[in-house]
Length: 342
Image (cartoon, rainbow, N blue to C red; front, side):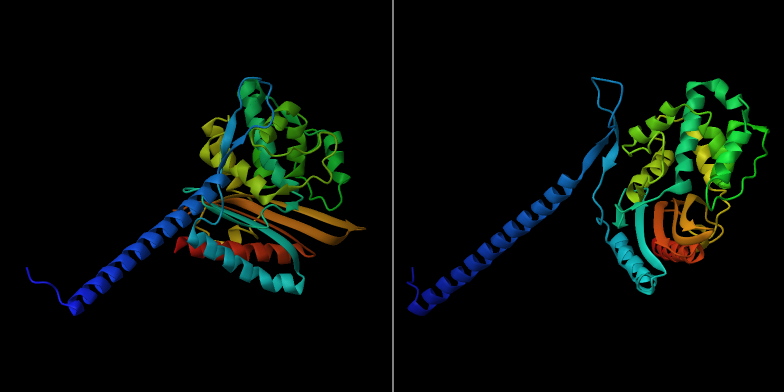
């Protein structure tokens, strides 16, 4: 066997050294990538947790209402988040919108994004959805309740007259109405008289159970003034209707969503999408002021947009002019629709 020359031997050693260097570099890179990937997914997993019913009459079970997922897992949604912030920068700087919150959730994948989604707002008429759910749950517990006529009394009419900035009621004093009629009136037309009549006929336990089952803090039983809710919390009411995961008959969930899809308020979410797109939504408006002059307005519009990729969008706002706030919500709705539909 021919003995290698010193030059060839040096080349061989350098080749081995290069191969060894590449091998260990790849190994280290793979190890680093594994560690980073492992840490990334471990971080995600720590953010995934079940949502339990906070209180029940039971001692030996712990019911689950859903799974909390971390946001910003979808790059497409994350880009939408940045676009919404750009839209909001001008009215925020101008002071026409003093603050806002957005919660957007893909209803097929569960991916979501939020902007100030944990900020609290006065829900106002948004809570009429909760009343509708409680009414139909009472129907399931007491089937006769569905056909029980409910009278709009003078005492109920008096409640609305005592509220500043309250919208006029379409119900007639002394007239009786069915539960489905009142639910539709309070959801589609946001009629205050309808919700007062329903609240006067629904067991308090039914209302409390809706909040408790979804781990949403309920209003005070005796005084709901000052009650606040977040866009993230409010999303749960629509998600359980869409997914049929609450102890509510699917036909009743469908009926509630159908009533919500016929809402007469069209200046917010609906204004941002084509008129061929179904939107099941509820708006709420809270006005602070004195002597008939508004000093601060909170306007929210939240609901499901039924595109081929259906999504839930909730926009909560605060400012001085409801028209400006509605237009702001419509701009965000339009941007989200265009991005998700393309």
